Image 1: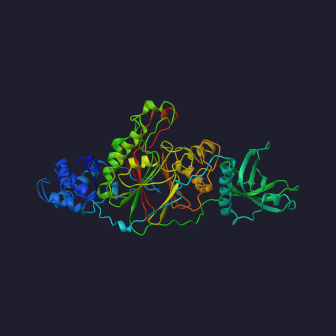
Image 2 (image 1 turned 120 degrees about the vertical axis):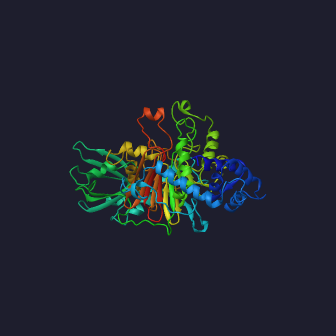
Amino acid sequence: MPLETPAHVVSELASRGYNAEREAVTLLANTKDPDAAIERAVEAAPDDAVKLSTDHAKSILEEGTLSGGSVDEQLAHERSKTATENDTHDPSVSTATDPTKSTNGAGGTPVETGGSTVRDIDAELRSLEVAGDMTGQSTGTGEYRDFVAVFRDRYERLSGQLRGRVNHRPTDTLESMAPNSDAAIVGMVSDIRSTASGHWLVELEDTNGTFPALVMKDRAFASQVQELLHDEVIAIEGTLADDGGILFADSIHFPDVPRTYSPSTADRHVQAALISDVHVGSQEFMADAWHRFTDWLHTEEAETVEYLLLAGDMVEGVGVYPDQDEELDIIDIYDQYEAFSEYLKEVPGDMEIVMIPGNHDAVRLAEPQPAFDEELRELMSAHDARIVSNPSTVTIEGVSVLMYHGVSLDEVIAELPDEKANYDEPHKAMYQLLKKRHVAPQYGGHTRLAPENQDYLVMDEVPDIFHAGHVHKLGYGKYHNVLTINSGCWQAQTDFQKSVNIDPDAGFAPIVDLDTLDLTIRKFV
């Protein structure tokens, strides 16, 4: 069976107003004449049907005029083809802990499990909840009071995560304490500068005022200053100077993820595919790789992949960077989304899909980004996908996944030392966001932030999985037991990316076992 056949069946059925169960798609695709099978299935469909069932497809095939064999023979043929394709196209497979280890048996060749090449899904076992979706909740007007409100909310929530770990005193109280007293401040970083002697002066601000802390360069923790960003909330413990006007730091504390954090897992073996940065509309969109990915989703090997999470940049957009129009395959933004919708129809119709926007999408650039408007939602309605804001936390069968497109990663990588954050290891920059418990802590830099009545970018709860994209680089690892994934892209290197030295990791699909949080990286190029 050609790689494009299942996708062709899905697309043809969708063009006639029908969806179909995965096994129905496979059965129709396996006939000698799929187009004739599609026509017969549509003609014989009940008048009120919108989704063709497996039983309906079987009844068509059992008439014997289209299939060239029984249903059992067709399934046996599909299993044989799947085994052959796996022998000739063995995608690279790795885990988050050992890049060379195959999770599919010796040599990375999938183990033949027998039975149907399609899955029998019990929808009642599924659960999917979304938290933090601010779509329709935007109240910011850009006035001064909005900025005050969002920073006050950030401070209160993040300082609450630190106050139980230090003997915190408000800044105005510190000024009245006796010299040489032990003290601690919880505040927002308002200034960082080095002294003439090479020490660090860090100024913290709380709701009562500001207070300076001096970090001596020879202290063991002094390197932590290089990890600080303006506007993040931290705690500093130390001793007040003789005149009481400065705190000599003994330690720095971040909100952070507890080292003992134990993530939740699903009660059954079920998987999620995590991808981002599809960029339909670009001349460099990798359609062939996408077809291989969606075809793989129709195979027996992917029978437990029931969820698909897309972390933004569905399309290439228009006017995102200089001379972008010269690199577009589709000029009109709405045409780009229509094309993306057609590609999305290749995904099995029984998969649960969640999407958030990115900076190339047709939403506001300032974060948090509300989800797409109704007109764009209509264009992408084929799978009844959940379309939520950037960021959002999606809980799948008890496993929480923080989805964030990742624009702030550019800023983190630019500001911090290479060993702490770099493009070749994007997950390390994501570790920094987990450490700060905020997906975009620095205000006024490259990341555009919108003032709202609350800070939707704070991580109140520790996620089990942190998924981002944006930088077009693949990276994964664990930070204090939080599985952290940057999922690469589906766009080959553009001229613009070449000019800024971006060499993308394209055509990858990280697959997470939700019952164990084991990670497999599949490559489709």
